[in-house]
Image 1 (cartoon, rainbow, N blue to C red):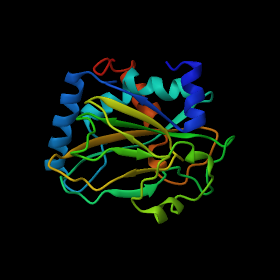
Image 2: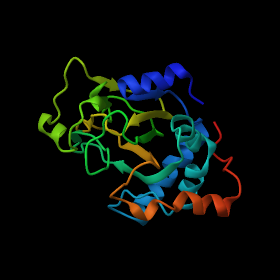
Image 3: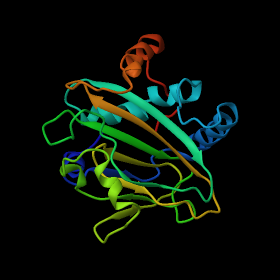
Length: 224
């Protein structure tokens, strides 16, 4: 799926931006389902179990990403998603690499596939990332000290509905407070190389193999 230059870019800067990766009708399905889940399961960000997001997880649109990036077999780590209210507080600088010690080149990798079915703009706040910060090898809480400060080296990611951003999970990123007036729709799927021990979310480690066994084939509902 990814060219050699794209894979090199992910290694170097820690992220790839995929504009309009999902079609309009797919985005509408995701938005509608997030609205349904908000009513059915208030105050939770877990996407699974849910029929539509099981379909999305099993789609070639999602699974082709870790399959292209990981040389070894990979594990499904988690799936989160929610609607963030207008005027929300944001989330300060952090990274999401989930292990007992920080990531460094050569360690098993973990990626986040961040999906924005309603897009990102200044009315909902952009995704702010610090290119190359995945190489700093720091614990997860260290970036928090910088709060919401944005520097000249940081990139503010905006885009139309269907935008996808693939992150090395050790990359520092931040969500500024939502200025309003719109709600912010986001979801993410995370995968990790099978070469490591992952201390959290162990209940998900066999989910992908079970789904594959039951589904027989990848979903075509979310083909790109």
